[in-house]
Amino acid sequence: MATNKTFYLETFGCQMNAHDSEKVIGTLRQEGYRQVETEEDAGLILYNTCSIRDKAEQKVFNRLNDYKKLHKQGKRFGVLGCVAQQEGEKIFERAPYVSLVSGSASYRKLPEMLTRLEAGESRITGLDDRQTDETFETEFTARQNPYRGYITIIEGCDKFCSYCVVPYTRGKERSRSSSSVLDEARRIADLGYTEIQLLGQNVNSYRDPEGKSSFAELLAVVGEVPGIRRVRFTTSHPRDFTRDIVEAIDRVPTLCDHVHLPIQSGSARVLKRMAREYTPEWYLERIAWIKAARRPISLSTDIIVGFPGETEDDFIQTMDLLAEVEYDCVFAFKYSARPNTPSLVMIDTVPEEEKGKRLQVLLERQREIQRANYSKQIVEILEVMIEGANAQRGQIAGRSTQNKPVNINWTQPIAPAPGSYLRVRITGAYPNSLIGEMF
Ligand code: SAH
Ligand code: SF4
Ligand code: F3S
Image (cartoon, rainbow, N blue to C red; front, top):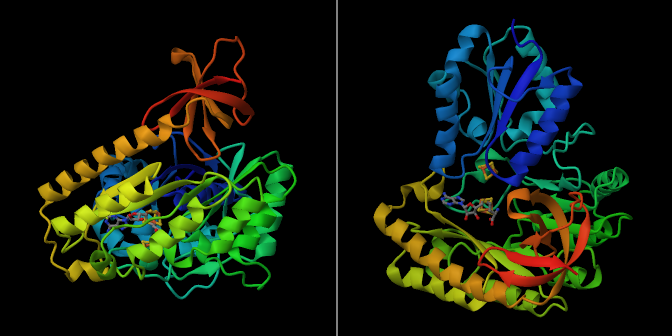
């Protein structure tokens, strides 16, 4: 048996996956494993996978293909995450050198699965699907960032949008107790973290199993933890976006001036076919609440172009919505037909080329919107959390409370440490970032 207790882990996909990996790394270390930087150096090679779109899913099979030769040296392979849950034992057929396949709803069983792996078993599965009510919590989380700490507050999804794999890959919606979330927030604040990011597929669908706090109340108490200067939360679902979230942001200064609220499409007809269960009007009402807040709250969204049956007119409605909301950031994707999902049987009417064209048109228009938005901030004084330096350009880089990248021209010999906060005067703007100098 040649796992020699070293592992390599590569992560694909969303922040939930990135944070799951932090918990998986912590669990492996606790079991006596050491992390290494390359596949070649590892006894156990793990991929934490994403299957949100076909391209994402293909990445893991490409990786497995590239490195399968290492199996001959006795190295073991494990596939974790959303592709693992989705494909299950089929992965063993497609890649017989894989020994472990586990979805995120089974990670609490990792120590047991590792013991079986070490004993030489070769077809180990953790495929708890929608049955499980448990969340994955560990005190050994190996946080990769020393000042921004992720905390998962809700796992899974019960919304079943017609295009989406997540309800199948992540299991049913289940929240952690507010007291365990608050304990973790206090614990990481004591370790010196100043920013907390609360995570969930739909973070604002949070329902405290202890019945103590609503999502807005939880936001507020986390924001009041001594030492915490910034609290972010992602992703919010329009269906569950309540007015008290905006009231909490108004009341608690540490809650960041940013809401990510995916719309997916500006057409009521398409939203219906997507099973999003809201209309553009319902969505825009929530946007109006956010825009009426006392502080300027930055808005971002996700869009899918080329959903089956999306007409030119539907697409124009999406473009009109973008113009109306004036987002600071848009993540736009071409529709990708996914296994198990209801939209798979809908006829994919929009040719690939047309999807690409719509995506291009949308991104170009959005770039102009952002150019205008960002340039309005010139001369403002912002607080920036420093993330790193770009020595070549003589700049240090950070983010504003609105989550906008800010590059600061820096001429002094010593740059401020990552994780520190600076007051910065904005002197220039691009469509995706601001330029500033120390105030
Ligand atoms: N729970 C969040 C989204 C999580 S998935 C929400 O409901 O808003 C992240 C984004 O991936 C989605 O917002 C959507 O825009 C995109 N996405 C999901 N499934 C997709 C698919 N089949 N094809 C293209 N994009 C997809
Ligand atoms: Fe997917 Fe919809 Fe759930 Fe978001 S709400 S994760 S898009 S099913
Ligand atoms: Fe991908 Fe799974 Fe996240 S499908 S986007 S890793 S929830």
